[in-house]
Image (cartoon, rainbow, N blue to C red):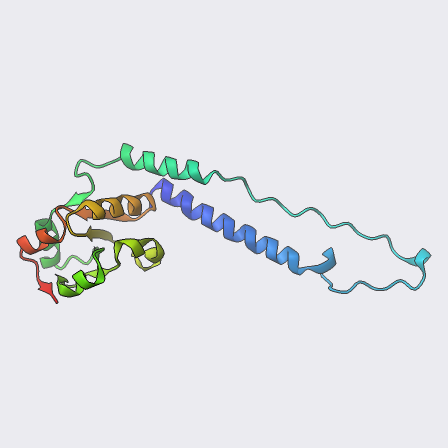
Length: 184
């Protein structure tokens, strides 16, 4: 995972831990862990009230700066292949039984149903952000679309989020030209 991906993951963890801490503190009524305080029968005998310590503030985080840094890292460390892969190379890997790749088709559901490479997973481009949890972190994600434009954008975002992703050059039509097995 890239440093930007680690930072995003750390940001999410810190936010979740901060929220958990706030909820835990809120659950402890009257700071003493007891929901009920004893009622003093004699005001002179009542113990002085204990003041709650202030809740810890979450660490300040500049999310825009983290995203900017991830984007700069992406462009500054772009490989010579420009994070694109040729259909012939994908075919070669598949025929060799390489299970280190994950085929992601981001076309519309109807187009995917009309024909796709065997073993591909369909998550339409517009739904990709809500489905990051369905993507493997230990495989090369080969993203394909209609022409390579949206898959290039998707691969860039996935790489900034810490995934190992590449765009299929030329999109789905190049799978057909390379004679990969298409299923309907």
